[in-house]
Length: 375
Ligand code: FE2
Image (cartoon, rainbow, N blue to C red; front, side, top):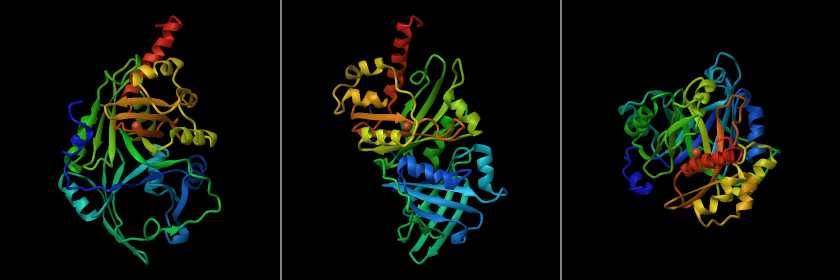
C-alpha cells in the first residue's frame, strides 16, 4: 500500500462535512414484528415512534437505538403507498442511509449542483424541542441518502415522533456504531457509482479489489471502498464478476430486484461476547470456515490477543493489514429473500475490510478438498 487510508481520506473534498451516519431506515412488511426481532436478537433499545397515534396517517415507524447505531423500521398502513411498492419490489430492505450534517440545505444544494437527483427538497420540522431540517438525494437503485441537521433539536429522533418507552427491553449485545454500509450494483456499474460518490459527495476511493482477488472457482466479485473526508462514513460498492456459476452479487440483484444495500457492518469492542450473545438470541451466522483456516491463522496474522480456540468455536474470521488486525463474522440474510445481511466487526488497529480472509478462506477450503482427493 503506497498511501495509508488516512492519507487517502485527506484528499476527500470538504464541501459536504458529515458527522457520521444518522440512521438506517428499513422499509418492511410488518414493522411491529421486525422491531421485535431487532430488540430480541440484536439488543436494540426502543427510542421513538410515529404512526396514527402521533398524527401520521399512512405509516408506522419505530426508531431503535444501540449506542451510536440508530435504525428506523417503517411499514405502510395501506397498499397505495410508496412504502408498499418498495416492499413489493424488494422485500424488506434498506431505503435510507441517512447522513448527519450541520447544514442540510447546503448539503442538498452542493450535491444537486454536482448532479444528484432530488428525493426530497428541504423540509423544516418543528415541535416543542426545536427543529430538524432534512433533505434527500437518490443513490444506487431506489436507495436514498437523507441529510439530517439536528443541531437545534433536543427531542426524541425528530418532530412527528414521540418518545417510546417499552416494558420489553432485552439487554444490548455490545454493538457500538456503524462501521460501513455496502451497496451492490449491477454489471459494469461499480465504476460509475464510485465516480458518482467522488463527483457528487466528494468521497475518495480508499481501497479496490478486483475479481482476481475476490474469487472462487465458481464466482467472483469486484469492490471499491468509498470514504468521506473524516473517514466516519464508508460505503464499499460491489458489482458481480464473471464466474462459472452465479455470484452472490448476482443472486442479490435477482432477489432484491435491483441495486441496494447488501450489508451493514456493526462494530463492537468485544466480538467474542457480542457473537456469543447474538447466537444465544437466535441470530444465524454463516458456517465456520474449515479447521485448516484456523491451523494456518498464526502464520498468516501473527500474535493476537484472543485465543484461537475461542475464535474458532464461534467461526470468527481474522485479517491483518499494516496498521493492525480485525475480527469479523457475517450473518445469514435476515429475510427469506437472500438479500440484506449484517457483519459484526472488531477493529484492533486495522482499517481495511478483511480482504485477506477471502484468499485464506478459499485456500483453506481447497486444502480440505485436496484431503478428500477432490482438487
Ligand atoms: Fe463489510
